[in-house]
Length: 120
Image 1: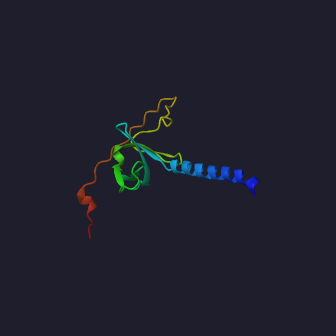
Image 2: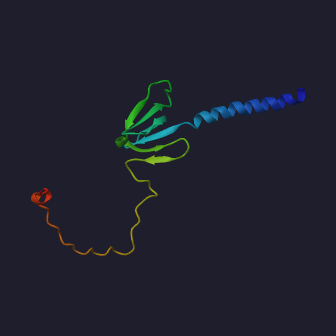
């Protein structure tokens, strides 16, 4: 029985140490356009606002920030959501050949309101 005691102590220490690592995995990062970074747990990304709980103060009420003020959000699982800027890798590709000039199309005249009315 005593020969298993060191093994049990090591297993308990490992489990307690890994519990602390799991708590750090829930940190989401919100990068604002002004260069500020917010460490938080994102609750909702629906609508015009992102609702989050600050990481430093988990007992506070939900806070929200407008999506127009956000550059990107990096979630805890590694996914990134871009809002007001394209990622550096997604630059538009330039075509090698110049685009052909479009043929001039005849401009249609606007429809008169008299034609839109139904005649009985």
